[in-house]
Length: 400
Length: 240
Image (cartoon, rainbow over all chains, first blue to last red; front, side, top):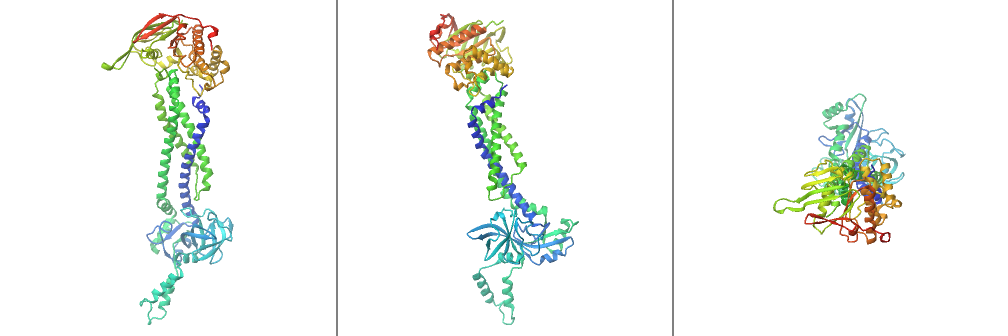
């Protein structure tokens, strides 16, 4: 038996293929949306991986440092280092802001890293060009996604930094590229005020009789000095000694330091379950809508194609064609449309994904799930056309 | 041995109660193997209903129909698989050819034996032979859209004949054709009926082809009246 579906497609292949391409672009958008979600999750995991930490010590009862503001004294790491099982502890600050370079500015997460050497928690784990930060001030390592080149001068708040190294896939959970600078600079950047504000602050303090007492010389200077420095960091990143369980060490730190500590699974839960949950739901809604729209389009196309062949279907039924042969013809055409659409969609998504400003991760499991979803959608969408075809009366071919 | 088609007291009622309409009120008809009869009548006389009953696409209300040696209807269908009956025992030629546009000429004809389970190669061979008999073998590889209306109608005749059915029902087969082509088509039907021992019923309004029938059934108000026709032979000069 010849393939009626194949012959019908072959007869008007241009229209069929172009319809498939149109559907494919829609499927490509759907796959890309899934890729956007996967990219967000991957960005979140990359953020945790790149920190090089096994524990995140943050301000008590906060979800910091990524999901909520967190503030710790910058000497807290010393007492954390004394906790049994802690191998390394390093301060870190995170500040998402605009980083300017020449005529353009880039949205970036500025990371203040403690002094030390490569391998210190918080430091970029590897470089693709240049070197790590070696000076105490005004050097930066940037993710290549920021678009900076070695030697570029970038401005963060009022200071300029020289880009001495480039790294890759060091991004925030929002996909913003990271720019690493020395911790002291970052602390200053977080709290640095403009000169007018500093002047006003000093004037207010000096006019406050509680701080400006003639009987206590040096008090005013001490207060002003304390107002001019920032002794806070957002978190302390902790690495464990071999053989110690993260939950046990986290428990010790929480108990003795009166701080909140998150393990890797807990931090993943915060990032994926809380920080990007709304975005994930948003994307989920888009995926559902796109799936419904795709199904509606396939159903509409196949239904229209079937209605265009009503007379032929009546003739086929009159001359003895089985209903299942006709149903199979329609379903094969729907599946063929879906397969063309899927192939085009996959190619399109793979082609345009790198051009997205944020990371789009097309994972094979999503591709496979997408394939089966397309098959199921096409099968369901063809049912309306099949129903219409099976309701055609063979007597319609005779007329009268 | 084929014995054509015989219809006795065939009735068809549409609807029930006060709104019931008797489309056929006891039709009697017989067409012998190799014979072509005309079925003529005004609009609404029951021609299409009769054709649909004969074609096993609607069920008569009562009566009896015999196709070849087989009683197919006797106050109820005697055949379970009407689809197979239509495929194997009844050929259809329509007012318009209604060829399947996405199949080439050969496959349009070969489709019927293929549907009956005949291997593709054998079905195509049979189709090509029949197309040759109808003088359109040279169009065998063409698509329906690439051939003329007259050629399309020949292809539809080939499709009706390909399973060697004992009866062919032709519903105004010459309606869309000019005089010459109409005469050619009706002559082909006569030749094929003779060659394949097929009983052919031609529903027509076409005054040009009515004289070619030896017997004509007039249908009026759901009843048939048999009349002897001229049985005129078409000459070569009249062909399209």
